[in-house]
Image (cartoon, rainbow, N blue to C red; front, side, top):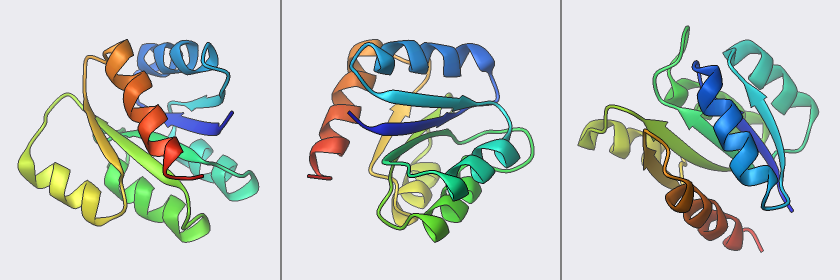
Length: 121
């Protein structure tokens, strides 16, 4: 069981991620506001962050950099509806472990979360 933070500016996406990963036994904390997600991460242990690249105020890559300051061992999966080689490279260079394209595919998400969390052990 892992502590997972999910941040997306679309609430339906965070609800979907929460449902999928809660069924797998994880504790999922969902957010649509960057500030709230960052504050939560500062006060709580997070094993994995699932971040949309396009958010309201900041980019998911900027949020990832802030979260990594507080939790360097935290893993991350980036979500995007606009996959480009540049965003993939940037996310990976900042410490993202995986990359998922939206719309979210349940099997792909479960598989990538499992893979990323295995590296934690």
